[in-house]
Image 1 (cartoon, helix red, strand yellow):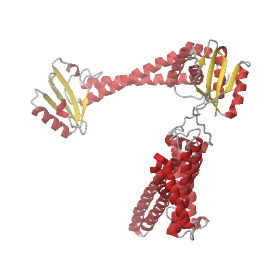
Image 2 (spheres, rainbow, N blue to C red):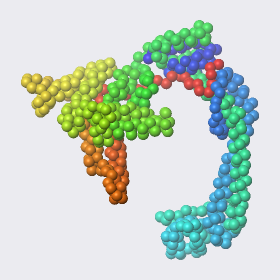
Image 3 (cartoon, helix red, strand yellow):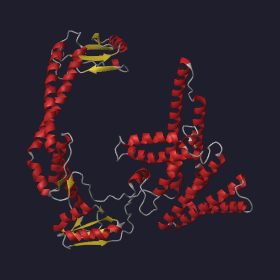
Image 4 (spheres, one colour):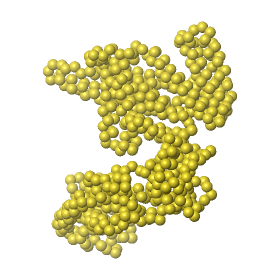
Length: 618
């Protein structure tokens, strides 16, 4: 990334801003120069008002296909919005629709209350008094009994009417002096108060019900007419309004951009970050729109952290999304995401390690991607899950696991590269070796980052940490498992001990973390543990509950029962395997690996730009 400074005449500001916006290459930052702060463009208020007006109208219309239109000048946009009389018509219809919807709700509620009182001779218009309060409640039989008992036990001068309201609900109508309170009488009861002062509760219950039906028919008829009118307006004007909205949003961004600028009497200064490969193109474009009356210079940004720019193929973008939840990498540290992209599917595949479970999780992840927002967490997690599911299928083929059965030979494949039950010691060694390799990789990255940031002592400590992990692994493997013999074992042990002491001395306040040099590589053995556990559970399910079709009704019934149990248990085992594969795969990367080097708290690169959908360049 390169920090640049743009200096141009004030008269060319609109052209410069439009060029910057169209190219979408610069992340604007406020200049530190001792100059006057610039302000948003003078037309920003008019654009904002027009944008609010158009957006509100669009929200009242049903979406239609949009025909992209050419971008207009800001003056023409604002003027056009002011004279669009059909926008006022849309707002009037929207307001009337809201009023009718509210009126319909009030009418329906009045009918609901009146229906509850249909067996009670009561005139709601007479339930207004300065001295007496009238309240009604719906509850169950027990609630009605306890409420009446509490009311009478409290010694209130209270009249209580209890009647049935519906099949299970009971109606309680009380009248009491307004100077008293009955709120404590129904605390803890399942009770619903009815609003006796609601709109349209006037007259006898039957009268209210009849009036409500008439009002409902009227309101629904008018609502249907409004929807029809709005539908016609959508057909005629939705496309135009959608294009206007996008144009106004673009102009609003441009109007606000100058608030990041500095200015003199006749010129302005803009600064920001640009990718080095785009500096020349940006300079050429600005010179073209200003007839050469613009200067773009590369400036030093010593002491200022550049924004982080990442650009990965679409299928891998969700990994950046997931890492950003942990913390965005700094621009001055090595990007660990590629290692995460490679290791996470491997860890997940080994822990799920079943073709059937992998196919089922792939289908489930794909289903989630079709029903979630592409900018949201669920969608991005599901995209990663899809890749992990493919890894689970691959490792399931390598281990010959199909819902616990060994079926490779039935589909024309070899028996498998390894067997979880027979090759357990080797798998433990392989997974721990994964840990050793990834921890050392993290320490190597840590050395580079620390040295680059001037923390030379910490960099040396991370180097001695590598010696601890590497030679400690050789010593332990030789002494306890016979993997090495001869003098290499004691020599490696001595180097590991000396390196451990050196690491503790050099690490200073981070010396307490040296125990992680031993525990973190061993943590990767959980890959084998969860993978083996999933295989054993699947094997036991198959052994105990694989359904066999017997003879007669009893045989068929037993087959059905065992089939249900078989599917349910495999589903539970699959969910457990998937959960552990995701959680432990993320943990091994973020805790055991990232902790060796990752600083994070970077600043994302946010270029000043836009993406046209409903419009074209002018």
